Image (cartoon, rainbow, N blue to C red; front, side, top):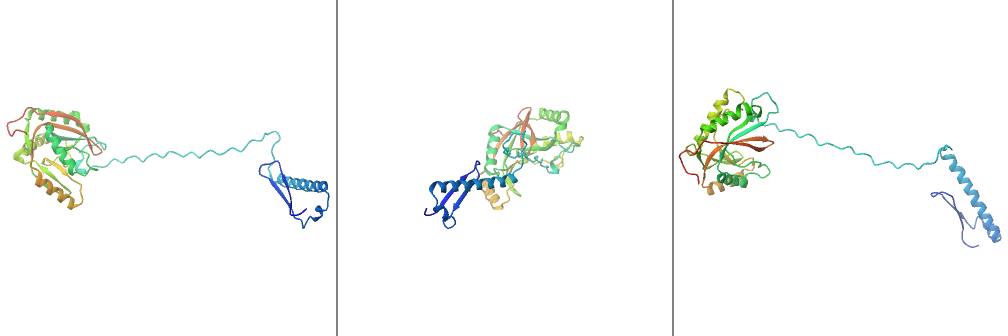
Length: 289
């Protein structure tokens, strides 16, 4: 027999394969045997090798209880990933000058503004939306009288005095006149002679009624100069200067009628409208256009 004689014995397992390679140089005697004798010899050698392998593996495998049926090794399940909760949102601490002076640390804060006619309000809001940084702009245009009224005193003190003053106040006209610069933006003023003094009178009357309560913030205990903030919180001086120049050249002013007062609740930078307090009637003066 020329070349290599290969004898392969496959045991009864999926993972064991015994290959017997018989080289002619080592088993040349086989070539001289008859075919039947060669076959018997090869089978005998394969059987001996299989028994030797079975003996080796039986010594290494763990013994199994005869009373216990063989069970496949369970496949481990995927590990459970614990849900990670988002960190609690930290409530932003307002400026001390904007905090009402009460004993509650989580006091709801309310804002009081002048309520102008719809046409004027839309015009001023459009101007603010054009120049105020979009990512920071959460409010429509507004004329603020009080910045931090405490919610705990809303029903007992705040609203009753607003109702009283509103009922005694006549509607008046205001003029959104000239732009003026601020540190990081600019605003449009309401001159005293064109509605500013009337707004200050409303502020002073309410301030006097609330003075004994001792809850007004540092800012609300001060004076009042109503104005429309058009741009703010812009650090680039060149951007502020350019916008201010544009508005100064193009803005021609706008008149409005103040119809009453609006109360808002502060919520993380947003103002949520609560109620409007109507003034008695319009006073004699400039016609709103």
